[in-house]
Structures are given as structure tokens and as C-alpha cells.
Length: 359
Image 1 (tube, rainbow, N blue to C red):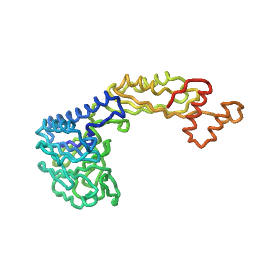
Image 2: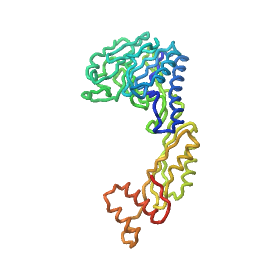
Image 3: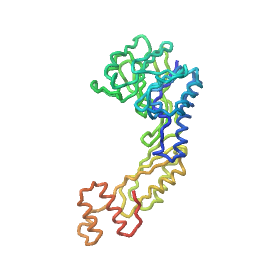
Image 4: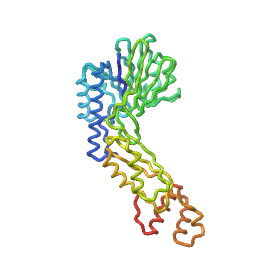
């Protein structure tokens, strides 16, 4: 008997703060497409139920078109149940009318759905139930028990909130698998001697805070218990690469290094490059030009300049010049080291009558 654990679909995300309107629209469509592919996969492999542990949508006010699109995908796979939990971004589907029979919802009290020897429990956390809900969860020791929740896992017994899952209060409750949503990267850890808790992560990364492989967890239930495996499934992967460019004097050298180090990344993916190291005052990084070059190669690219200024303070201590006076004043200021470096680098270029790029 198989189940799929996924979460944090964030369908209908705006995305225009990250992408151009055209690419944002394309990426929104891809979020729905990946969910549709997941539904196809579940049906083809005879999965009993897809367990969606919260944040199906990105906002509480769900656009009618987005809701209809989601329900249409579910309706097209009647042999598979879809157990849908709300998260901290979206609202419960339990009050919706005319839902398909295979779309099962949860409320602010424990609900249970049974599949053969497996019981699947779920609850939607609220400010009102977040402290009392643990005592009312009473799974049967002789059954295989899966529990669905959405929130940040916590070891603190006193930290009750609608966004927190208190792990100590779920131990020794005969839970075999605790299916969680809220964290956008996959992880699995022991809950107690019997069970584990896991975040499936999101199906698709949407921004550069969601790097790495994304997918779902396949649960295979047998007489030996539950075997779980993470399955990468995203259409695109978001990569982050940090490159030390200390000593480089020209932008074309950075481009050559990027060509070399990013050669193995698929052109359909997204890439963020973080540049660090120490550079001389004359070296100016044109991040916009680098982004444009990489964006022509990948679906999207971002370049972040975190380099620092390499400057010998003693060189300017006694120099009787405008540059010397400028550097001394900046170094004596209350600015942070990072801001001092930025001001000195831009100021020295200006004094040398070179072009200054605003950053």
C-alpha cells in the first residue's frame, strides 16, 4: 500500500517580485503542471492517497480560477484520494461546496481516514486548539498510524502556537509517520522508538531561498512498517554557487570562471552566484551585465556581490592628497566595515574619474 507525502505547493504564487511578468506567469503554470504530474504519477503507481500537508495555495483568498484548476486536477484522478490540510498561508477547504469525492479535508478537530490497516489522522492548527489538540490524539497501537500537521517542529513543551508542532507531546502515541508541512526542504528524523517525522519540502522551488532538489516522499506500507523515500520531482532546480574572485582585475575573468564552474548546471534551471573575496579599489563588478549574460543561458540568474575591499590603511595614513584625506575620514567614521569598503571603493573610482555603477 502506497501513499505520497507532499506539502507547500503554493499554487498561484504571484512570483513577480522575482521574475519578469512573462516568466512569473510561466512559473505559475509550471507549479500547477508539477502538481498534475504528481497526480498522474500517483494514479499510475496505484497510490492510495496523496497527503498534502498544508499550503496548497499561497494566500488565504484563493482566486476562483486557481481553485477550479486545482479541483479539476484532483477530479481527473478519481482512483486516488487527496487529503488536503490547510497551512499558515492558505485557508481550509473544508467549507467549500461541491468538492469531488476523492478530495478529503480536515478541520480544527482530529479527522481520521482509513485505508486497510492504515489510519491517517490530520488537524488544522488554530490559536484556539493549539494547546489542547495533543491530548485528544489517540491512535490505535495495533494499527499503522500516519499523522498530518503543518508547522515548525519544536522540542519545547511550552511553545504553543498555530504555527508550531510540539514534538514531545506527540511521542509515545503510536505514530509511525508524522507528515509535516511548512519547511521547504526535505528532512526526516526519529520521533520516538516507533516512528519518524518528516518534512517533504515543496514540490518546486520558487526563489533563491529554496535551493536544491525538491520533490515528495513516497511511503510504502507493509507488514514490516513504513518505508519512506524522497523522490526528486521538480521541473527546475535552483542552484547557489559561491565563487572567490580575490585578485581578479577584469570582469571578463569572472565570466570565464562562471562558464567553467556552471557548465554542469542544466539550462532549464535557476542559478544564484555569490561573489566573495578581496578586490582592489580599481576593480568594479558589473553585476547587472553578469546577470544578463547568465539569464540568456539559464531560466533565471542572480549575481550577488559580497566582495570586500582590499586596502592597506598604512598606505594612506600620511599621504598628503585628496585621496588620502578621503580614505582617512571614511575609516574614522562610524560606518560598518562593509559600508566603509563600499564608500572607499566608489569614492576612489570617482576621484580617478572612472565610471561608478550604483549598487
